[in-house]
Amino acid sequence: MPLPSIKDAVYAINRSIIDELDYDTTIETSRFESFVRGLNLDQCHAYSSILNAYDRGEGGLFFIYGGGGKRKTYLWDTLISKF
Image (cartoon, rainbow, N blue to C red):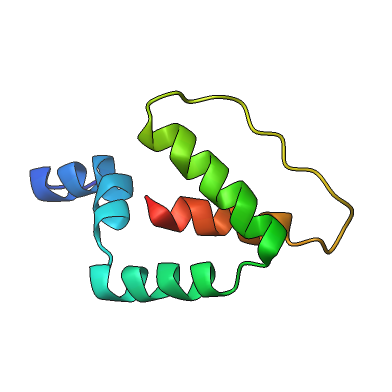
C-alpha cells in the first residue's frame, strides 16, 4: 500500500485552516454591507447594541427571540459577517 507524501499529509491536516483562510475580502465586505442595508429597525437596534457592548469591551449575553420568520438568523448572519 503506498504511503501519502509529506505534502499530502500536511495539506490533509491543515485543510480546514486553508479552507477558512481562502476567501475574497472584497466579496465578504460587499456581503456584509448588503446584510447591514437589509436590517429592519428592530434588527438594527439589536445589532447596534451588540456591537456597542463589543466595542466597549463589556461583552454580555444577548437573547434574540421571536417566532419563525422574524429574521433572527439574518441578524446573526450580519453579526458574523462583521467579523
